[in-house]
Amino acid sequence: MELLWSSEDFVIAGQPYEGFPILLWDSMASCIEANQFFRYYLLRGAIGSKNSWPSTGRALYDFFSFLQAHDLDWRDVDRGEEISLLASYRKYCTDTCGLALNTTRQRLTYACAFYKFALDKHWVVRLPFNLEERIVKGKTSFLEHASARGRMALVNDAMPRNHKSLPKLNRP
Picture 1 (cartoon, rainbow, N blue to C red):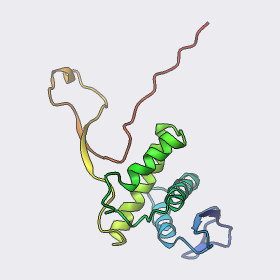
Picture 2 (cartoon, rainbow, N blue to C red):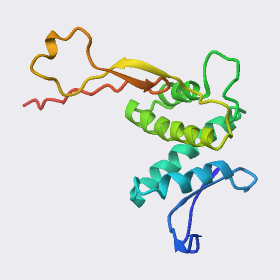
Picture 3 (cartoon, one colour):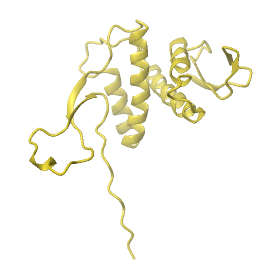
């Protein structure tokens, strides 16, 4: 697996896109699906910044490299195993690589967005994750303590919980 960055000669719809991520297999053939996702995801108006290109490119490069190193096919979302591809990748990021939870969350965010795109393109039959209800913390209201229900949101079950770290105190 190779991650390259385009030169000014890389043109889409008449516009040059220098520094755009391009993913290649070991054979140097284009990883077509990932590269189509990059074009869709990174050139939308919602993204709008070249600053997001490197993190998106590296995240998918890492995910596809993980799959390739473990002889897994990204299309195999119905593997019949208890642990999904994304859950296995999450465990690899946190346990094997020792990545911070925020880094792992960022990489999984892009991998999940790729799978949503793949589902829309009918490259996969279903998403390799489910949505589950979790209690979320946010701004609290004056009477929040009186609510027995709490704030619930549907979240992707492949994502690790978002733990906020406590501020470090300066000691004299």
